[in-house]
Length: 116
Image (cartoon, rainbow, N blue to C red; front, top):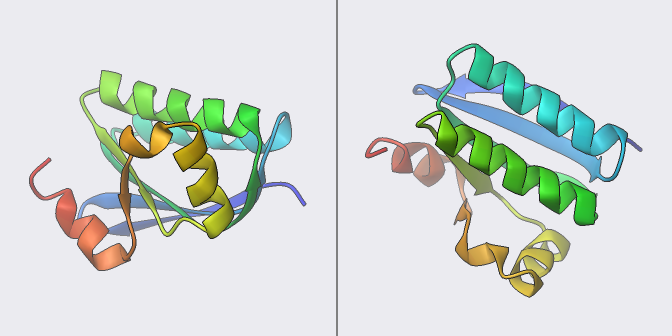
């Protein structure tokens, strides 16, 4: 199953609800394209909802870092929401847990952008 996403807007924050697998090929390309499209439209506050992401490989991790960097370079902020245990553990192992701002519930995640 490849990655799919839906875009929502809540209080000035663009939320990407991701589902499936972020892997080499289609999944990571989909994430890259979605992020670039949002930046192109001027979205600076992006929240990636990973609640339905079942698997991320090294390419997917690279794409998360790339998306984070691209958003930061545009003066924006990218945060992660609702990590599954697998994804949480993967970010712990790769030490990326300290890089990303990770939230557990949508309301506090959206509110955390207020100061950004």
